[in-house]
Image (cartoon, rainbow, N blue to C red; front, side, top):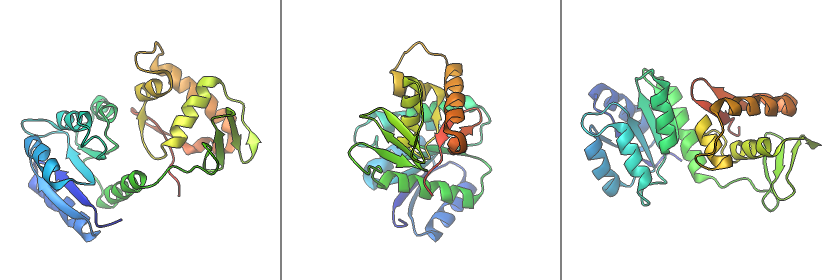
Length: 231
């Protein structure tokens, strides 16, 4: 990690220069552009491993760029970190639901942003942890989908069917933020008649049953939930 191509899309020159300086200092190759239209063209020629995408762009906005990239098979797997000065949680939620990997709000700490970049690239490049068959394990939580069993530090955890599916989804995607709607769609399918509030209730129940592992399920205020990434 460190030689990957990163595309920075932001129309503010000071932000462009700040991002380019810090990314190149970490060894990344950086391409910078200032509009959504240019970004869509550059993606085809530069083929970046990651995109830092400002939501507030002239012309084609960041959310539309995200949507078009994620709807195109050849670019759908490129991770996107949204950069936003907006305080509206709905914009961040929409970006995540369109397929963005993460977000950072302006003003941001370069150190924090670099940590997010490294985390997303590491997540993109690694293979799922699968000790035996389809079993997955993280933070001492072991899930066996075939037997429909979950263990915490080798002790069985009694979860409902929906709780099992929610925890499995989070554990399979550590570090990634999911909105409540995304969680519903992942475990029940799109347009399933479940309220977002019900996800909060399910998460609360899962945390209680996990005991000392509860804090590994992190609440992202106004957005949703994520499973803490592996150390």
